[in-house]
Every structure is written in C-alpha cells, then in structure tokens.
Length: 284
Image (spheres, rainbow, N blue to C red):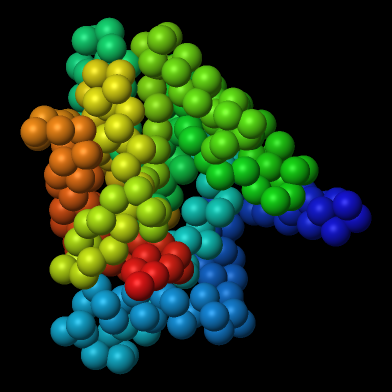
C-alpha cells in the first residue's frame, strides 16, 4: 500500500537525519517529540493518566501529570533504540549489570527465558545476540516495510525476531529455540486474557506465556529490566525467578505469573516515570 511506503520513507529519512547528530541530542529530540505526542493524542493520554491514578492513588494531579510526561519521554526514546542498536552498543551507551548471571544459567545447557517489562530502553537488551543465540517474540507491525527494517536492525547484533501467531510459525520457532538451548526474551507485562492477577493492588489479567514455556521446556527464568542513567541505558539482569509447582498446571501458572508481577511492580515503583503506561493495563 502507498500509505505504508510513505510511512517507511519518512522513518528512513528521520533515521538518516538523526544519525548525523550526537546520540545525546537524538535522545533530547525524542524527549521533545514524546511531550508533543502526550498533548497531541488525547485518547492515549487519558489511558496513561488513568493507569497512573490506579497505580498511585496517593499522588495528586500534578504528580500524576509529571509521571505521565516522563513516561512519554522514556517511551519515545525507546522507539529509536532498535534503529541504532549496534551503534549504541559500540559507543558504550548500553551498560549491562550482573550480566554474568546469564552465563551461569546458560551453563546449565537447558536454554533460558528472560522475562522483561516495557520500561525505559528495554530493547537495548537485544545486544545479547552477540554472545548468545537470542530470540525475541514480537507482535508483527502493520507496516511490513517498517517491520522488516526493525528485524534487520536487531539482526545486526545477532538477535532473531519471532513474530506472534504468524501461521503458527512462532510456535515452531520457539520450540527450536529451546531445542538449540538458546535464549528467548519475552516482554509479558501488558494486558492479556491468559490468567487473573493483581497488579498494583487492582485485579486485571496477564500473559502467562513465560511461565507456561518454562514449565513445558524445563528452562530457568531470569527477570531483567532497564532504566536510564542520564542518556545511558542500564540493563539490570536482576535475578532468577524460581517456578514453584502447585497441585496442577492451572494453579502453577496462576501462582507464578502473580509472583512475576509482584517483581515487576517493585521495579516499576522505583522508577515509575520510565514505565510505558500508554497501554490499557486495567481494561475492566
């Protein structure tokens, strides 16, 4: 479609234009665009404000607005990280912490699931492709040209993209990841109909894919997240999350997904302005 080609051309022009600028200036420009987006798109702004009011009922209107603006700035910066991932890595803008834990878990020769959240520059974590067979599950973008470009950018650092539910091909590719003792990265913190949980004290639903796969393939789960340190992206490989078995599979999944969301909540509370609140997290 002509629309998709025009969108792709605009992205290419912006990408080329930003590349000539210092990295810090690129991020500053994206922060400015993030603020513009906050004011320009009312529907998404209202979802963000509503989410923050649910999560932080003790905060006043000004505090909520400040967090919302910070979230838009953080989210906007993350949009360009896949486009310059190799450059950011080579110039030292990506700083992993406790990265040795990945090697320890991989030494078990079972593969690894890294569960992460939509926070700060989370796509910077795909630098792992230079060290491990790293695979990331994504929802296919509507624009096929932009989707292909993003896949190629991740591939430059050795990370493979697995698109969800593409003619059941994603299930086969995930199976091959664990067959080859590779790493599967899942950002599984957004709304999904899989299982009932509580998040920030409110009932909602969540994706259970990370726990189901961990049980099925008997692989360890590592919780990792990112936050900004100025204009550098710190990747925190926080801890292995033990999967505890309950009386049946349904209870095992529910119990462990809830435990994961308790871990997510702790991290988000420490840096609430860096979390992506634009997603409708509490649909009911």
